[in-house]
Amino acid sequence: MSRIAIIGAGAWGTGLAIVLGRKGTHQVRLWANEPEVVESIASSRMNERFLPGFILPDSIEATTDLNTALDAAEIVVSVMPSQHCRALFERMAPSLRPETLFVSCTKGLEDGTLMRMTEVVADVLRSRRFTPRVGALSGPSFAKEVARGDPTAVTVASVDAEVTRAVQQAFNDSRFRVYTNDDVIGVELGGALKNIIAIAAGVCDGLGLGHNSVAALITRGLAEVARLVVACGGRLDTMAGLAGLGDLILTCTGDLSRNRSVGVELGKGRKLPDIIADMRGAVAEGVFTTKAAVGLARKKNVEMPITEQMFAILENGKSPQQAIEELMTRAAKAEVY
Image (cartoon, rainbow, N blue to C red; front, top):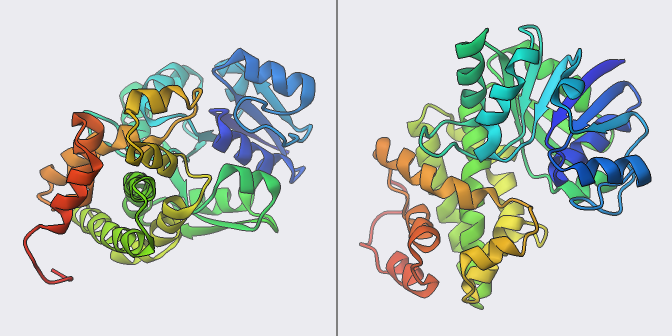
């Protein structure tokens, strides 16, 4: 049996643990920062805080000890919030080995450095001991539906074909289909940036706007995400796939989307700190990614008007109504440019 460590026991980390655990061919150790999560899994086989109602297979062991989670792990799956990725990998580094495969499932960018998560992992481990073999897993995948066993398709990207094959084999089953890709930039940026557009889609809903508005937002949101992906060296065709259009549609329209839910409340006039306080520790990555996305777009000289307006709403308290007015009254131009 292969040994897999999952670092991060939120809803998504727990859902992935269930996928791996139900195969019966892996020993899965799930690291949680919260002792109550470990206690809940030990007593009821459920993560009552972040993913209640779903039984975890017996092959999953939960722990708050990083060394225990990482002991002899062949694959390390990182599912921590983006703002904690660097600090956690710095703590983990002494326990990691060059032959270990790393899979980032965090959809975000690091504030300040503007790095994608695989870049953060590589940056930490290269400065410590070795260049890691790392990939990124992304795609339209609500944790609750994954845990329930709804058919789901995602993609894993790496420049190392052995990494993508190993991850595909480890995760693939009749309810969770994994495709492979070599466009790490496109897969990671698509997964991170769609969260910002999803907040904007939620704002439309909170304001009571209709389907026309949301359809326009998704389409133009995809256009600006694609511009930045290409400017950073990613491929346009990735944006037509699971990590691009697929994840964008899901996150902008699904009621289970935390990012969209944040936008709905903003559209209703609530303040961001109050919205976050009500999330009880759950993370809407778009809130943390927007500033970095704006910085990256400016660095690459890429126009991203929706992202800029979301930054103004989230960081500066701009009213959603004013943001939409400014988007609609921008200078007229061709659709493709």
